[in-house]
Length: 317
Image 1 (tube, helix red, strand yellow):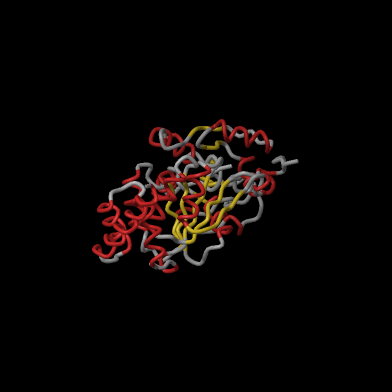
Image 2: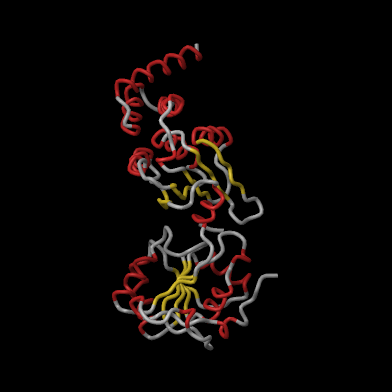
């Protein structure tokens, strides 16, 4: 998810060799430097915001590449212009991957140095690159990674939530019903949850998280590594209320939510869930949804939903 600079004139002299086929053999860091990287597929991480987060090894590989496959040639072209790189670019994204993959594999069979980059961050994280990697493995073509920036890991680091076990869930479905179903499948996971989300859908996504996952601790990180980087931390219902009032923020968004084992189903938690659910559903449907998500008795949840709905109606007059 993405977002003077070092130039790549020295790149070819400092490059490392790609690992052997099938994951066996010598790793890139084990070989002496050579004038150009060995032929193969290189999965190269690019900055998520601050262009100075490019690694020296990435500059080496990208500067020596025979071809760079990227999501958007315009985005990568701008990055290359900043970094002084001029390798040939070719589009490779979810809409053309099936058509473009054979040509990339053909170049790899010829021994070319092919780099795969995403618009920003680490390739294969929420993009179609894994099929190209799988095809290389099946043909025993060399493939290795040039690690670097990752929005998911950066957001996790800054969240203040446990990092010893986490689950990256990517983007949630855009439709509300499908989104809540996906969240319900993750509700019991004993790991910190990490999501990508569009800024436009952030308010409704947080509201659904509060309903389905409960009022867990969470963090919303955006514009990571950029000038206006922001990490807002709080309970899910607090974050949902903030963005509902303030509107969608600018920039790419990472949401981090505490693990199921860390959350508790207190009376306040139940009320918070029901309050969100009652904002968009009938008493009966809201109670059924929250009972399913929490495992609490449906009759108990329904009774509380009735009380909250009456109190809400009395306040409205």
